Length: 321
Image (cartoon, rainbow, N blue to C red; front, side, top):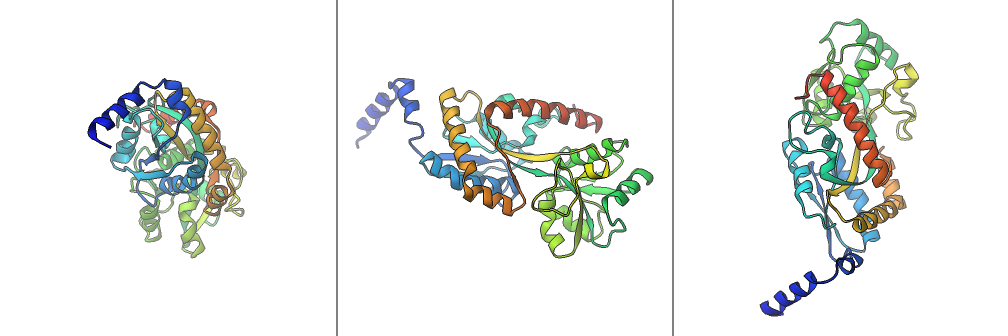
């Protein structure tokens, strides 16, 4: 095809009625931007989901990692992409509080929220040689020991696992900063620090701690979910010990704001089909990840409520600008 022919073809396509163009969607590969590094929780979930999504969409799905800036780089790239349905993203809870803690002018309104795909609840893990044999013993120690006696980690300051620590303390009626939260680049380095004696607890996900638990190096004392996890049937919830608190990290499919309603509907339908596929459900469950699908309307309502809850906790931690 000559250059002139290509130009004429482009003009002709641009002149097609919008409905005709949308009716053909998708007619080329779709990219999902992951705002976190390869091999992490978000990356794992999206790559599992993509195996079913590719079939449901009838087009190749390219998963591209765009990490950096505590999630800001990738989320900004999603928000600034052309809202045509060909660049999607994997939004995580940070979109609800980036702006409130002064990291970036990003809020849920900057995105088209399609659905949450998976949940990973927070938990409480200690080293195998910890003096706290179970959750009630640890709870009693947290309440009786002075501020700073306990150190935890699992994420950066203001991250979901930091909020998990604060929410746990608040539910105990203790100051939200009574446990010193040490920032880390993720669960793996935080767990290694705990095993080596640098921390005395970990408030990240039991999924992240599973390998060390299986190796007998750590003990998972509790999980911050409403019900016990099928992946950890012997681990009690905090609520079973009278601590009325639950918090899960969530992982979603999103797109830039302004996505046409017809495209959003097609994406939601394909995402629901993909999410329900056995290959996706089984792969998530095998890793201790809870599959979850709510759709655009419920997800948008949830995100607004989560933003309020996160804002309250982060405000009490003194992190809101």
